[in-house]
Every structure is written in structure tokens, then in C-alpha cells.
Amino acid sequence: MKIEVKVCSPSSYRGEAIVVCHFEDSSKLDGAALELDRPSGGILGDLIKRGDFTGKLAQVSVVYTRGALPAYRVLLLGLGKKKDFDLEKARRAFAKAARSVRDLGLAEFAVCLDPAPGGAALEDMTEAAVEGVILGLYRFTQFKTAEENGPREIRRLIFLASDDREARRMKDAAAAAETVSKAVCFARDLVSTPSNEMTPTDMARRAREAAVSKKVRLTVLGDREMRRLGMHALLAVARGSMEPARFIILEYSGGRRGEKPYVIVGKGLTFDSGGISLKPPEKMEEMKADMSGGAAVLAVIKAAAELGLPLNLVGLVPATENLPGGRAYKPGDVLRSLSGQTIEVISTDAEGRLILADALTYAGRFKPRAIIDLATLTGACIIALGDDVIGMMGNDAGLKDGLRKAAGETGEKLWELPIWDDYAELIKSDVADMKNTGGRAGGAITAAVFLGKFVGDTPWVHLDIAGPAWLSKEKPYIPRGASAVGVRLLLRFLRDQAAKRRGK
Ligand code: BES
Ligand code: MN
Ligand code: ZN
Image 1 (cartoon, rainbow, N blue to C red):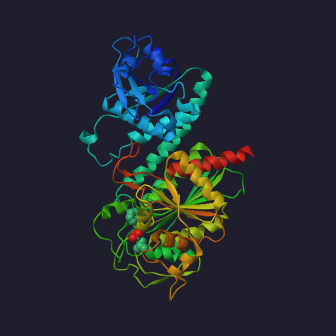
Image 2: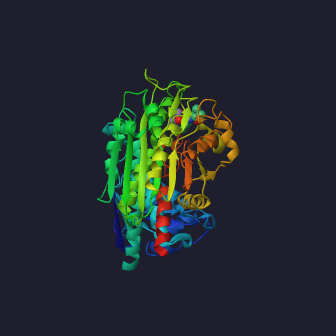
Image 3: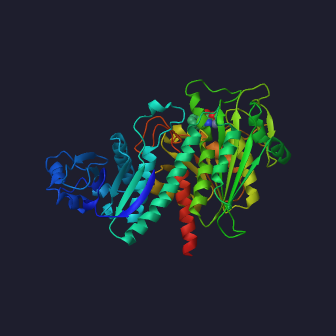
């Protein structure tokens, strides 16, 4: 879909459809809706008078203008109550509007954000609208034969601006939001792709798409390199599979030379069967999504480079399958990690923390400003917080605050769990430095405490995305399946950091 900004008043826009917004609590039209209502002899006001359109959130009424206006259709879009309005509501509403347009079979539509509702800045509203539209229209159709694809795709979205200055502001905002939204779709595609077509090798190949400029360097470590380095925790997980493991390293240099990078690490389990500690068959197919953290990391690097963020950023993705093959690692095995610390395997299904252990140790090489890892790590996190919430654990208050703020802005729900020292007791081992599980109680936390042993003093946050990475029920702008949670969160966080330092 192509996104354009045109200087044009809504009442002179000539096209298939124009979307204008209305709040639930105003009984009279204003802004663009009013501007369209006057010359058309009140065809929009009539819907409100008769109660057909109330403006409740994401309500869409299609009005055929029948020559009263140059636009063939007006779509009234409800934004809900003014006092409840925020950008998340805007994303949801615009997702719905875009789907209505697609259901009508239209190839393009115009949007008028005049006046930017609820006092939201025009730039923010534009970003929210673009995100809602692109993310709401997302479909994973790669494995569907053509006939089944449903209504055709919308090809063009046109924002109407009142003058050149406004158009310029909207253009920049729309371009940034398009980059971010496309990165989300990229991550969703990777996660949705089944594990037979998304092996660790495939993932490393797709990582090339994140190397969008000379400022991004891609390195992929294979078996031999990892063995030489001593990544035996990662390699142990890979042993049960015929597919070789990969360690993906993406370095984006957008900041000054020598400036400390942010390092983001994503769990890249392209399929998690549980290994010898085999999972039950129900929903096992969803474990193709156990590389959601890794996919998010690739997407974030891609978008950060496209946005040209003025900072240094490293993405690390340990990628492997976890299968119960003849050479598979087993409960009771003791592994020597890259850090030198030894780990007793209690469950081969607690594999994510093993591959992350080596990745977090490797992260130390970059002398990071901060490390953030994303992982579909524990079912326990779902038990603790539910399906929709990211569990956040970490050792640095400032970093946690930054992520909390970013999550508030992107509408990704995030809640902190504590990692008090007491929990370390639960992963003490009789034979090794630690064991890889700490029992059922506090399972999300003991997993994080385990990871913390490979981080050292670097500011670090672990995000457990086991719940929200995969949706069993669709949301307004996230279809069922892969959500790509964390992509917008990290990009918001990094853009905030970049803006802060630019301001200094
Ligand atoms: N990938 C799973 C966690 C998971 C579960 C993600 C459900 C998404 C949905 C992880 O590797 C795992 O199996 N964790 C175990 C840990 C346990 C053995 C300590 C779990 O949560 O059961
Ligand atoms: Mn597992
Ligand atoms: Zn897993």
C-alpha cells in the first residue's frame, strides 16, 4: 500500500471514499465532518440525529453521497468518548475503518484528521492512523491458494492536509509509522511461517533483510564457530535436531564511533517440542512461534536502520530447534556455558534460558549501554499475568521506566515481576553451579533469575512474551496468530532514547 499526503479540503476531495472522525459525546458535527455536512445538505448530521451513528469506538457508517459531494462515499468513524480517547483508541478505530474499506472492495481511500481529535498532536494521530491501517489489514496468505484470499488489497491511502506545512508534518510522521508497521508485519511473517520453512538457517537468511544499509553488518556463526567459542549451552539444545543451529549477529552503527550500543537479544527457537522432556501434543503446533523474540529483534534492527536512528544497536538471535533426537541432550546432563558457569539440566523443555545464557554472555563483548532480551520463555508468565501481558524483570530502574513508558505509548501491556535474591535458592544444584528449572512456583521469575547470572552488572531487562506473542483471539489491529509484540515497544523505546540524547 502506498501512503500519500495531499493538500486538499475534504469537501473537494474526489474519490471512492473519505474517512472522517466523530466523538461519541458530541451531538453536533465538527471539523471535517461538519465541512462535508454543510454542502451535502446534512446527509451526515442526519445519521447522528436519527441515532444510526453514535460515534462509539470503531463504529463505521458508510454514507453514499449520491452527487452531493465529490467523494462517492463518506465513512463516518467513531472515536468513542472524548475523555477516554488516546492513541491506542485511534489505532483500533482506524484498523476497523481500513477493514471496512477493504470489505467494500475499494482500491484506495482518503483520511481526514482535521482537526486532530482529542487535542492529540497531528504527528501522533497520523502515526496511530497509519499503524492501525497497516497492522489491521495484515493477513498471512503465503500458504493459501489465490482463490481463498478474500477481498483484494487496498493499494493507496491518502491523508488530506489543509496546507503545505501540515502536509510536511504528516508526511514525516506517516513515513516513520509505515517503516515501523512494516517491520511489525515482517516479524509476523517470520513467526507465522511454519518451522519446516523457518529453520535456524532460514532465519539467518531472512536476517539479511535487516541489513538494509552499509550501516548494518550481519554475521552468522555456525556450528564450528560456536563450538570454538564454547557456546555449549546453546549447542546442547541443538543436538536433538538434524537442523544446525545458527547464531545471528546484526550490528547497526547509527551513532558515533565507540559509543556504547544497546544490545537486544531474542530467543530464536524455530520449533520447541520440549526435547526429551517432550511437551504434550495439544497446541504443540504453536511452538513454531517460539522464535517470536528473535523475529522481533530482526525487525527492530531493520526498522532502526531504515529510520536512521542516531544510536548504535546490536541484535543477537540464538536460533535452533529443540527436538528429541538420538543425540539429544537429556535431563541430568551438565552443560558448560560460554560464561564458564555449569548448568544441570532438569528439563530439556527449559531450553530458552540455555540458549539465552550463551547469547547474554556474548552480549557482554559489546560493552553494552544496556541489554534487553525478548523471549517466549515460560508458561508460568502466562499463569501469572494472563495471555495479554509482557512480564518485565530486570536490574535497572531507569531502563524499566523507559520500557514502561514506551509500552504505555504503544499499547503493549507490560507488568513487572520481582527478581529478589531469595529466588536464587530455587535454582541451586547439587552437582553444578545452577540448574535450569526452579519448580512450578514463580517459574517466570526463576527463569529470569537464571538469565541474570549471565548478565553481570550491565543494565538489563528481560521481557517474557510467552503470552502476547501468539493470539488465539483476534484484536482490533492484531489478527489471530503472530502478534510481533515487542517490535513497536522496542522501537518506541529506542526512538525515545535517541530523542533524549539529541535534546541534550
Ligand atoms: N517455549 C516455552 C514457553 C511457552 C509456553 C511459550 C507456552 C509460549 C506458550 C518454553 O521453552 C518452555 O517450555 N518453558 C517451560 C519451562 C519449564 C520446563 C520450567 C514451561 O513454561 O513449561
Ligand atoms: Mn521449552
Ligand atoms: Zn521454548
